[in-house]
Every structure is written in structure tokens, then in C-alpha cells.
Length: 393
Image (cartoon, rainbow, N blue to C red; front, side, top):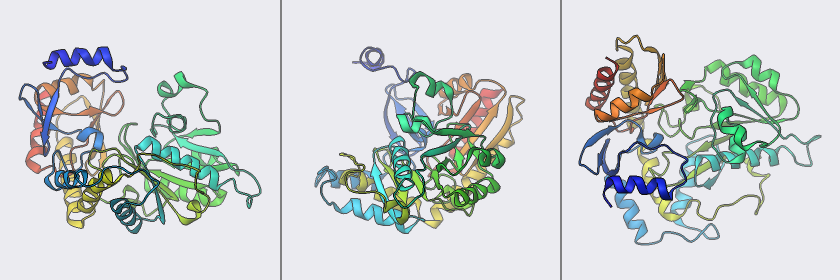
């Protein structure tokens, strides 16, 4: 099939949960994608903040090929080396004592909700605590539990009734959060930097206040770092910028560099409530995926790598702020996760940029989201901003 025939076949054979532009990508290298016609595009999407090391990173490719030639899958019934190696690195670099592996961000958040409710409903507590507080603009996935704590009504309402006991408070409003909590609250879930909701960073006072509220009510604090974690903000964990530690943290997108993985990191207090059979996954953290994830983690956790993300993120933000366009109303974000708020829909801008060889995505109707590979160069940043400027003018 040629490209057009394949695009038509997609409409015939695949459930239409996505609206895809009529471009067929066939290969990628670094921060550049190439389509079936040989046209190159500068990739400022990273597969939705996934390909942190860019496309076809040599060390990543070597690790995947070597592991595929040795052992790909045995299920979670057995031990494998890369699985434990990755768990050790995640725990020793974070607040956590244990990690549970799965296959996606939504699954990681499902596990977080289950673990929180189990930990807060044991025989030692005077009452079962099952309620969850989430926030406006928050996005945590599209499976039933994760969807229940995702704010956008458009996503939730077609599938109601969802998980009960969820209250939405206003993001970055501590009074609103306090009003939503009581003794029945088992957990509060929040993104330190919201991704899908418009690239909205938390304020330090907000996250610090949530920690205090959770301690006051005996609730667990869950940080969803599926998109903002693992180096994206210029620190390994986004919450490091705030001086606040959670009880549970969820990870996914960049961890295996494009292969499916999710992780739910927990304290010993949470882990103690979880028994064999309480949760599981056939495919999670197989040796092929975790071999890839070890390569990604080893690279993005290096101090010099994180420093470069900080510096290039600041440069990208500065370049965007210097654009003289009346259509732009705000530039915000952290590290290499940047949102440009516009007066109107960003869909025409995304299409125009793609025509000029730049891939960008939205974060809501009127926010342009830039999430390039973490290995992006200053020259590539200049090229991207120049294309955006040309499209705006």
C-alpha cells in the first residue's frame, strides 16, 4: 500500500479514537522525523513527551536488540535481571521504598488509586477512607478509575457513572482543596505540572499546603508525574522543585523511551497494605522493556544532562517570550515542557507548523504545547521558534 491507501485503510480497520493528520511517518533520528515522501520534520512532540532521548538513540537501540536476542518475556511469575535493576534505581533516586510496574500512565494511576484505598481502609483505622480529591485541569488517564479523577467533563460524561467518591477542587487554590477534604479522604492526586490541562505549573505554596492537608486528615498525597517526571522539568522528579515529597508517585511516558511501561512508586507504609493477588499485570516490566528503561534512566538522571535540560528549557521559554505576536497571551511551563496560550484555537497553528516541517501539539483548545526530546539542541530550538513566528505572522 502507498501512503494514501494506508491512511484510508486506517479509517476502515481501526476504531476512530484519534483524528490523525494525513502524514505517514516511516523513520526518525534524534529530534527529526521523516515521512513516507522523504520530508523531514523537527519533532517538538516527542510522541507526547515520551522519546526523551530522541528517535533511534544508539545506546537504546543496542540494548533493545541485545535483550530481544536473549529474553523478551516470561511474565511477572518469575524474576528477571533488568526488572530488578530498574526498580532499584527508581527507589534509590526517590522518596519511595517500593515500586509496582505496569504498562502505561493510566495503569499507574489506577494502581495508585487502588493502593491508596487499600492502605486507608485497613482494620487499624477507625473508619474506611475511600474518597479522592482531584483538581480542575487535571488529566490522569482514560481507564475508569483514572478517568474518574480526570477533570474534563467531555472525557468523563459519556462513560458515567464512574468511580464514586471523587471531588474536584480548583487547581492552585489551597482553600478550595481544604474545603473538599475531610476525614473520609483517602488520597489527593495532583500533577506538579499539569500537561494535558494546559501546561500549568503548581505554585510552591499549593503543593506544600496539600502536603500539610494530607498530613492533617491522614490522607495520602499522590503526585502524577507521568508527563512532567523523569527529567522533563530539568530535575529528575518535578516535585523536587517544590521541596515536597508524596506518598505515591506515578510515572510512565519517557521511562522506556517509547516502549510501554508505567510505574507506581510508594512508601513502605503503602506497600505494606498490598498483598499477593491484590494487583498484577502479565506484560509489565518484562526484560525487553526494562532493558530499554535502564538506558533511559541512566542517561536522564545524570546531573549534567538535567542541567542541559534546565538551560535549554529556559532558552526555549525566552525565545518564545520574545515573539511579538498579539495572538499570544502567556508562555509558561518548566524545563522542556512549555505551553503557549493563545487567544483562539491552536489547531490552525499546529497545521501550519506541520506544513513548514515542525511537529507541535496542543494542551487544550488554546494552548500550544512544546515537549521536544530532552536532547534537543539550541540550533533546533531556534529553528522551531522561527517556524512558529512565521506561522503567527
